[in-house]
Length: 356
Image 1 (cartoon, rainbow, N blue to C red):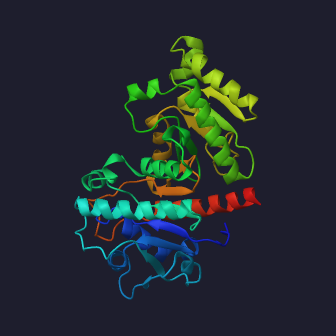
Image 2: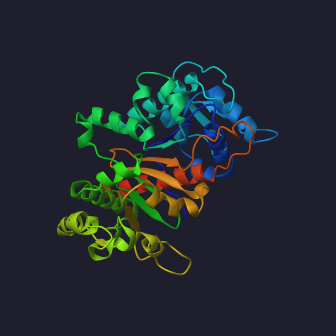
Image 3: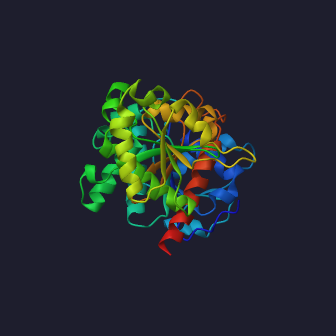
């Protein structure tokens, strides 16, 4: 698939400097120059030079410091541009949890998020953070469990609204399946409490708006039930009757193409794209974290992309963590990073068409 040319650059943050983030970014430049063209790293030049040395034995591709993000659009593909965020960073050991690494990672994300909110960059692709290192960095980073909450807070602040007025959702996607979550990082008991008519309806609206931009049409949305067999008419639970069906009815009244609720153990198969067979649904709205993410991750974590829906900016991320155990060894798989950049470019193109 030919990727559209960028008119504004895409910013990529290196994640935790001690993890595999810098390495998979450097490898992405080596293996997918057509995807990384027009992108730049918002981070530290020295860090990215060390990362490039890990993944390219022999003569390495140049890592250059740029004077403005827009300069990334003019550079040749076999050059990795870096916008230096803050002072030159100290050399930190690979694979260790370090508060300094958490601070450097947080600073890069804050800079890139604010640049995206100012429309200076077309999208934001984030390499993995380490939550413990981020928390150890202290204020303001210790108040955020991860990327999503930090981006949400910055977007709300920029728009002058409350967090409640800036609702976001996680979508995990690969070439075969997309799923959006009603709730994410809470206990299963708390997740059940989060399944309300308003929250499910809000999820359906966010999914419809975001996928319309990606697909260029209204998405066919399948809703997974909460209970086995989607409650079996109330025999196994009444959430489908008392929560999901009212939310879906309101969504249909608003023109959304919503179907279900379906048994959670079969709906993902119906939404999966297979060779020669058209998928029945474009996306599944799942009720809680593991219900939605296990099917996608089972198909291959290395191909998964995390997309934050509901923000006034485009943000994608690889579907894995910092992998401290293999950091610095030149072994990290960059497939998910490449897919995250590719997805960001597709979303940028879709947004441009919608704005035209």
